[in-house]
Length: 191
Image (tube, rainbow, N blue to C red; front, side, top):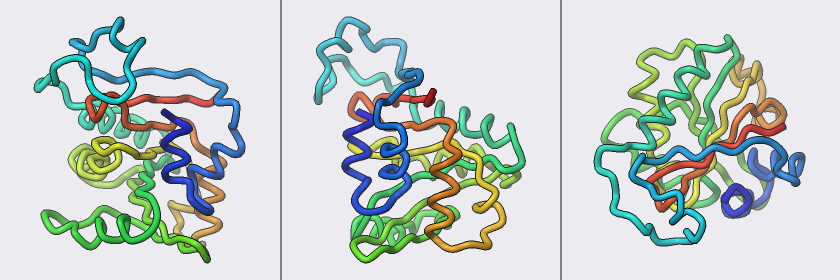
């Protein structure tokens, strides 16, 4: 799942493509955030369609938002960054954010693609609600890439896209991707 998401979102130069290039063996620890009703036995054969009823009482976005809030409280340069992919789809989502103010974001354009990254920083007000809104797109669709990282460059925002991408990719502490058709998430902590 981690590699599938990286391939889907890692077109051109991106946080996911840089990070996977540096961690191609996926060494580290993995955790699954999912509802208690998910059958561990069913996970062995899970591919695309859920093999259990959706648990209306469980919200993976709320769980990851809580973890993100704890991460943001851990250090002054902590950040949560969502990579929304490249091209018109990512730009369209940013433009369609009409139900509330769009989250903080930066654009990164290369010769072959233009990507949108949403982010939250340590000290942002009302973090839990804004984190849940920000994470919704990345964790409920088929592909998403969320990182918990530390980035002085993003905090200072005094540099352009390539330096931001380099700094964030070099200081990732955890990667989160959607799983179980939007009913959960895989969390990878690199070794």
